[in-house]
Length: 471
Image 1 (cartoon, rainbow, N blue to C red):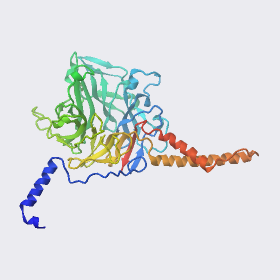
Image 2 (spheres, one colour):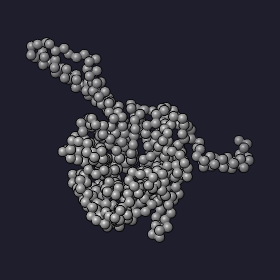
Image 3 (cartoon, one colour):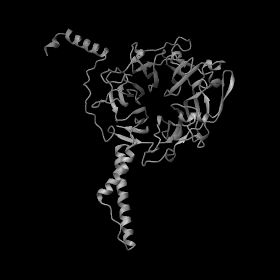
Image 4 (cartoon, rainbow, N blue to C red):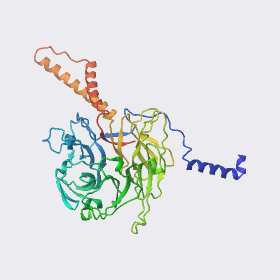
């Protein structure tokens, strides 16, 4: 190789390669257009947790596994676990989300509702909080709107709860879920004023050491008015002070500037950075859609009030647009780190190999953004809210319905049951001295079993169920 005799040429090659990396190019081969599928989902072990066949098409979202691995907290439609069976009408609160708990179990058989699966509703007791200088009594708190929960420990959750001044983060004691007590973690200073400003605190994420809680914060001078709303930013709550003086003594501070969209912050395992979904203005650009970014977390300067915002913000994904893409742009969101911190999993509407659909599927990208994203879990339905468990498995929500291998097993069991029933009917027909029963043919029995399978297949795209997945 005579070119190695010229020392400048290797240096030029390395400089060119470095330049390509800087501008976002890689030497990685283009992704294969062949997408391996086992049945109706990506190959791997898939366990369905919520196997209910509720006819109202409930959506079970935001699942998170308890530290001891025994319980999943999630959000659900109000009527999925009715907080009060006296109500039969469409009262205002039935459209609100509730927080539920379900024991970890392999979905073996379909059940009619969540109650039969052992799920429980987190029923809040009424409480008082100081708002506007007075004690504001929160009556019928069980029906208040709630958002995605996060575990503080095996018996305590934190989740956003809608009160008069907007969503605020609350600590919930779930030792007795039917009588849950709550207390505010952080209240805005303006909440103490006679005319509080409407702020929203959503999407809490707890650092691995439990010291810091990240959340998204936005404000509106007039409710539901985009013209008077500030942008969104990521704030951090110091859990060592959380709840002090009814939340008014809690230390909280921003780590990003305000942008058009900031969503779903998630901590790296070592607590040194956060990954989040943001609008293109985070990168100083204009356009539609969202991309993934990381921001470093370092409390240097916090005590003196000189802690900088947007510390080392880095863009991880760059999604190209093409003809036929949604006019709202490609959405990349719900990022979460792997256990070792080397990979980030996320939900994206980018086109999966071999299809032109833009349903939400789960992708992954190196935590440093050094390679292009590749698909991790695929169905022809929507997926959302992934999280990685300590054993490396993934917990998420999907509109897949019943997995193919589960449908296969249920169809085979249905066939064996039909055969046994047919033999029983034939034997008892002979016992009574008459022979008026016509045994079913093999084709008839197979068709009946297939009909039972089709009834369960109907749930694809109808409900959002909870699943564990390991490739």
